[in-house]
Length: 89
Image (cartoon, rainbow, N blue to C red; front, side):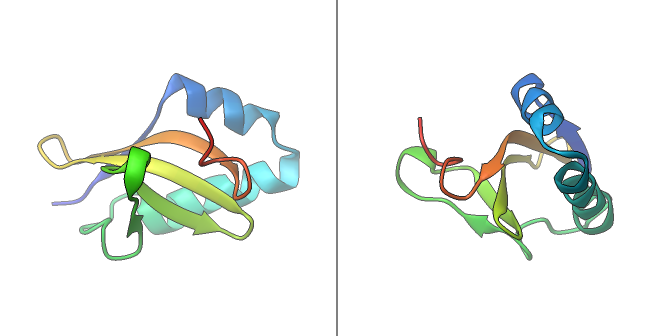
């Protein structure tokens, strides 16, 4: 059973703000590494503190913060951003 990707509205807006090269890197990573994966926890890292319950995926200097929904087999991308800013509020 494999997981499928969904973007939150916030993540869609954030993705649209990146330059074309960065946007294509992120989309390529999502399609290659996350879409149809059997175990998304194998390549990600669980977060702690106020972001507990979310998972982080690294793409160079950028991060995807995701919620893994096991009951529906969906990886919901909640937030996308530069590593310096993505964990803030």
